[in-house]
Image 1 (spheres, rainbow, N blue to C red):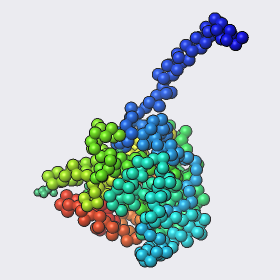
Image 2 (image 1 turned 90 degrees about the horizontal axis):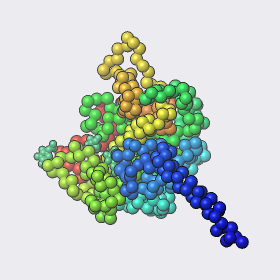
Image 3 (image 1 turned 180 degrees about the horizontal axis):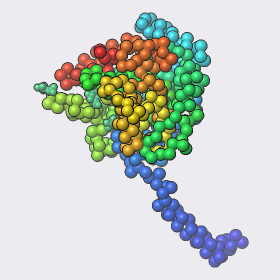
Image 4 (image 1 turned 90 degrees about the vertical axis):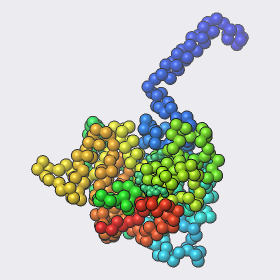
Length: 472
Ligand SMILES: *[C@@H]1O[C@H](CO)[C@@H](O)[C@H](O)[C@H]1NC(C)=O
Ligand SMILES: *[C@@H]1O[C@H](CO)[C@@H](O)[C@H](O)[C@H]1NC(C)=O
Ligand SMILES: *[C@@H]1O[C@H](CO)[C@@H](O)[C@H](O)[C@H]1NC(C)=O
């Protein structure tokens, strides 16, 4: 009975027409603009470079391939509307119950634990022996990240990488051992419970490109990533002391899990490590996991090659514990790369989106007859440059954060003035530890750097990699 029905001519014709219909709709669908977002990137190598992805919208990246970027996005999806997790992360060789725990950290660590207790935050000190099991647990779905962590040849590189990894996976506040908190966490401007937060969110938004700002509002949820300024040295010879004219600090960072800026940073560090380190199974020049057209992106030896002395620097070396220098640390895992990826991300999202809220209450247009002195420590000095960059090129220039006195926002990334994580340094317009925007104090900074730099060539590396403070 059924088979007779199946073979009847009418049913066959209907089936044929239905098939044809599906074939036609699907093939036209594949030429459809709607589907273009799924083939927006021609990238099919597994580990893309972050330097050649200007066509990708980093803010709303939808995983559709199996690159490392896709794996990271799938493993830690980003929820911009969530609250910032109430967790504090620190890391050291051993814990305070160990007699070898440095006595200088006993009081700073105590301040973090008691402040956490008082505000209902969870405190975690991750010791060296628990780092790897923790990463294996968190990054089991992204094994290349764990391989990269293991390959990093020095403790400083690993410690830098770890802070980005823990925040990307779990969120909260990461802070170095040589810091201590100055205010309860629910009084930080990033917390929706604070009065500072409420004041900030009533500010007016700035224009960029030709976007009609009436339709854009600041999001009503807490910022997703909070970054402090480390250095803003307004002097010609700034490069003697710092790696970047506007440098962000990474001794304290606060975030929600899965933030796309941290994803790009982790992707960049993983890629560089797998290519540059001696003994890496991925480091040969034919490895098709990398974008072979841009192999130098992955090789730390070529990171800003102008800073290396080409007559005595060996560009073919693979990196090991003995030949890592200050330039490597800055530009591989440290504040140099952190700052670069931050600016690239911020410019990417305003270029590829028309509804990014931009807030900087310091940035006022100078009055018609107002003369702004070349020495003036006011962002007004840069008003024209900033406007041109925003309106014409859709770029966030470093000047956007110059002499910053109040928190600035670009989408859900909050940039804090130097006073917030570096109060009391007595220069670069930093205010004191009692300021309302001073949240964390950074002590004994820079002492690690002498050890780290003993491998560097003194002639070719005059840059000390950012030891604050700059002597005035
Ligand atoms: C990492 O970022 C730096 C700074 O933008 C860039 O020069 C480099 O090419 C990037 N490398 C990779 C592998 O993403
Ligand atoms: C890192 O890269 C920058 C390029 O902006 C370069 O000037 C610098 O010398 C390199 N090294 C350090 C330590 O910053
Ligand atoms: C680069 O190294 C060569 C050989 O060691 C040296 O003679 C030269 O002065 C160095 N150049 C710079 C700019 O440091």
